[in-house]
Length: 417
Image (cartoon, rainbow, N blue to C red; front, side, top):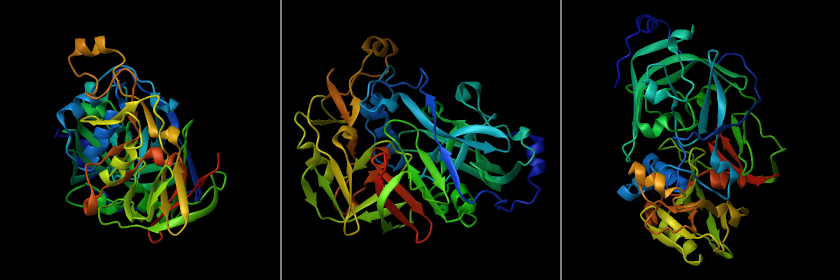
């Protein structure tokens, strides 16, 4: 880990480190903003990149071929027109604006900082502690995130004033990156706002409270309503549920917070016209793009897709193949469907193979052709009692989702388009 040699930061560590929320708006709405994918981050197999990212997050094994597929460079065509952009949200850290991913699957607020090398921080807004009057270094606290694919980020921790859409925490733990792997450098964001539970925070020796935990008691209601969109920017509403974005009843399920995730049990799932009333553990994760689920679900799904094959980079199929929808049930009657068109994530094959060959960094997935498409539903390499089912943005863009600290519980409603 790089060592921060900033005397002003060391002196500031002597100040009071208590975390508290200042007066702020009790109902806050934050719209996502578009951030175009840079040339060095565009990938010919964007699906494989997102699958590797989800495996890394949940410590699933990653094959060498999947690593190569995730690292391919070039262009991508997708049925979701927003796969050529990254949607982020502006965050104000004591007057410095950074564009961060709002992520319910993690519990750290970390940002690119001026302590990174130019190569690592190129293309990013970087946070400078020296330009922040309210910065207070926590001298004995560090954070270090390392994943199964070899990606990592680490750095120092301080307290700072953070404002998101009018909700302000005067002394929020902010983790500044002093060292990041290339995979993080290529993210089209300046860091992450973790909206999971505090027990999932990675700071040592003392875990730090998340932004959501810090503001929950001062909001009108301790809730987060999420409305992501298939065709434009989504909204994150803290403190209230905006009825412009959903219709009908909200169906709730209790949360198991043991791992710091928004984990719950669905009461069944459907593939096309076939429904299975099996209790299905799931994690609601705004920081994962795909739906990554157990083979108990994935294998039957692709058995209904003509020409579908499972290679080391994931499930692909002829782009003209007809796809079934996917349905999840909450409680006794909350039925929520991901339409068939969302189940196609985009082209799986390399578009610019000449460029790839010249770089020497990958080829198309072994089971893809020029007319192969990548599935939005991929295997978590689990089954039975060990099932891991991650509901990423593909699912969230089909529904309206509530993250409620009371309980806690997660709620799902039909979106209003």
